[in-house]
Length: 333
Image (tube, rainbow, N blue to C red; front, side, top):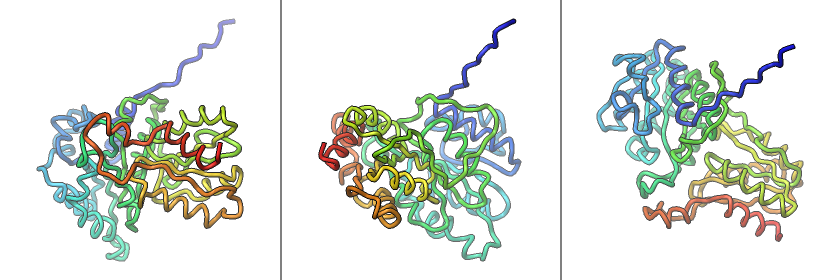
């Protein structure tokens, strides 16, 4: 009898999974189009629109002028009149150029029109430091947009998440901002060939643990997984949760984990002060205060612009070592 042949699961880098998610959306939705700076001819600054122009043509994939205000305005107007645009904001830092459109139109128009207008806009943007792109091209500003009722915000951490969340975002009838991470582009992971969508507002327990909960956002998930191995030697069995979706946020999964572990930490690359980690910590203490055996720890970047210097930037970004150090300080071990 011939032995069954086991085939390895297909793996893709994060950047290719983004491309596959975009291609799936464009194939499924005839009224979808892509607009942004350098998305057509150049395939995007990070390459995840590569080949899309050739496949879908210039009527559905086109470069815009250097005007984030215009790009978002195009997305809003076209969505309100029946299209399902994918708009590209090259760097998350450029939200400052179009914040009125994002905060006062994209987030509010459906409400202002009593639901008569839908705004199925998917915005892809790139956040995070680590490439020596300095203070104006390296920020993590998810707290800004999570504060705006009317927007949904997702933060894919793995190739699997990237494809599934982009497809889910494009199928939603509300504006969804997909916050990608530039230092994750080469990370490999399993990605099914078929189309699939991950539910918005549903967290993922990446690692089960018994006596410590780490909620890790974006690329910090990978640092938290490394930290968990070191913490194991200290008797700390960390459960790691990837929220995937920041707005809506899966409070229940986090609270149930804390009820089991009795200790928690929130980790994000964004500046610690005023970061989304404070909101998560507040929700946990509101729902599970009696279960906590220690204050909730928070790890984030210092209150400073992102340095250009590679040495300073490396010191600036939280990592596995800073997670371990914060856990030891919190628990006195």
